[in-house]
Image (cartoon, rainbow, N blue to C red):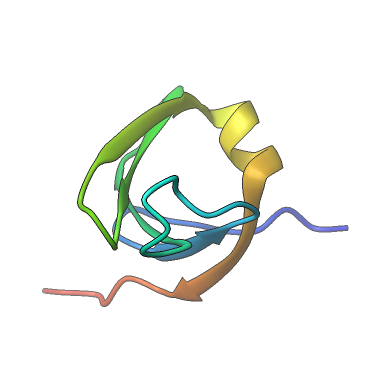
Length: 68
């Protein structure tokens, strides 16, 4: 199984929704060894190790638009 290819500013869906219960969708706002994602419902952000993020990632909802 190929890993899901995600990039900065992609909108993704996690397996579990945020405790705010407003959204299961998140925006990737920082990538590195750790990944920071922002809840699309309440606006709070969470920082987690890449390995944990990849385990909890369900699917990509919307790819980031390429701006030039």
